[in-house]
Image 1 (cartoon, helix red, strand yellow):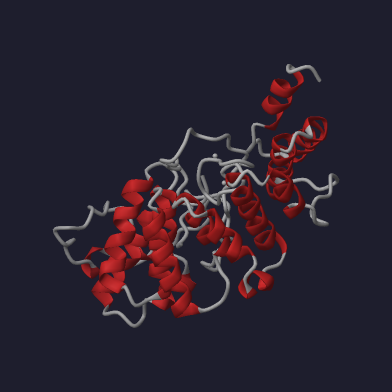
Image 2 (cartoon, rainbow, N blue to C red):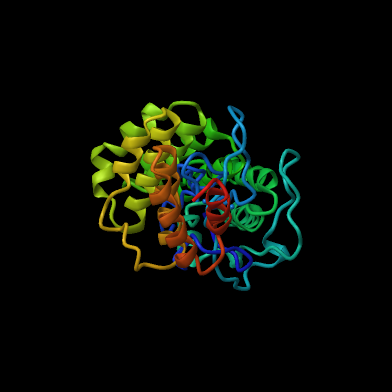
Length: 307
């Protein structure tokens, strides 16, 4: 999704995502409330995450966000009135606030339409944390105007994800990947399958050839989601094994490490290995320099049960 200076962490300055940014619903949903294993608040644009409709809300261990910068851009003369079915665009929202790399993707559009699309993308990114439903309306407006541009479909998919519209999110992200290629947002797509009550499909995505292309935090985020899908199926031991990689290093710190440790701890507790779970909740709390998880609270709760 495009970036705006009011947004936070999960996108790079070049307009491309830093990672799939699953916001770990317990078990690792990129961008929503936590399912088993939780860590992504909400994630990403979504951040105000909608909860699932198939069960009680889960704990959240930590989620991602948007980051970005603003630049001055096209003035009112370049704008045309919004269409009747589009949300209003505030006067202070400029096309120039969109990342240059994303603006270049809009060059195939006529100038006025490109300006309107850019402004809707800026609003989608700006609102995704506080009002994901309105962010989605802006993303849909951009899609209606420029549905053949990959970054527009990507923005629509991520906005739908954060608004809890799993089927729409999955459809839009699939379209974006057909246009642009690559394994981007695979963890988000897997988490959408979880949201649709299809954890088996999330696990299949985790085994795909595309999944093997992922490295670093992107690969870790997908493992978190797959572990969550295992927990959805009450496969707690398998969830534990899924997360046992070299990234599970207690000397690491930062949000990504804290989320991974949190989900691992949650899986251990679910598997009946409570003492080990407490240890990893403590590791999560120590790594969580930004206070994204409730790991300390989990330790207190579990310690109160007799540890």
